[in-house]
Image 1: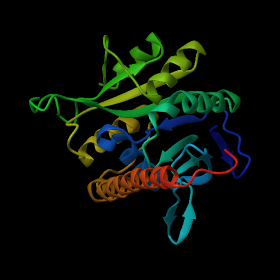
Image 2: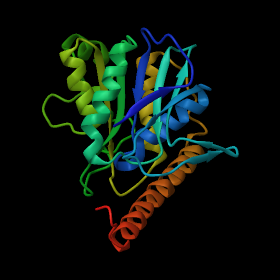
Image 3: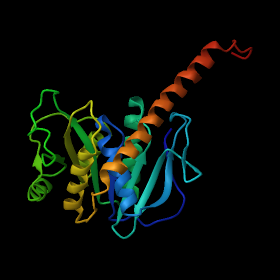
Length: 251
């Protein structure tokens, strides 16, 4: 069971929910990490589940949960930052829990960030940093976003937490936008996160400076990759220990 735990009571009505769980290319995770830092967003809670890897993160000597919730009251923005890949078997439950939270808190908009894997033989135009796509929950919203010079996807397939949130938003008349960045799936490039953040700047009328992104995004992606690796190793070690344990007399 996944639970959203808040450390303080906050009024999130009409906030925008920004999501970018670790996925292919770590585009969302790099973007969210950078946005949280540059907007000086406040840590207000976390997600917990017995199904999550048994990990904690250490930040400035303080142990922190690896899936954290941040807000910016100034920009009416709430975001979830995760430092490990969500197991696929938890995708539906997590999407359900997040969307119920969005409804309960009367959050008015959802924006997701993810990468679109492009064939390794793709030309430079396909991987151009200005080549950003989107899917939206409403045709009126599509028209508004097209004015921001972002290209809509008219046919295709979407998957993952962002896809489930988009569908739930459509069914509940909540605005939702999936920002999709074309990427080389074998390369983790801060330029992809830069494209996403510039798009967020347009959509939310922010002015997040991306000059320091290359260094900081590399640091963030390196930390996330390390945690993902440790999570997999921990899972294997726990499974091995359980498998090798002697049968219990109570079984």
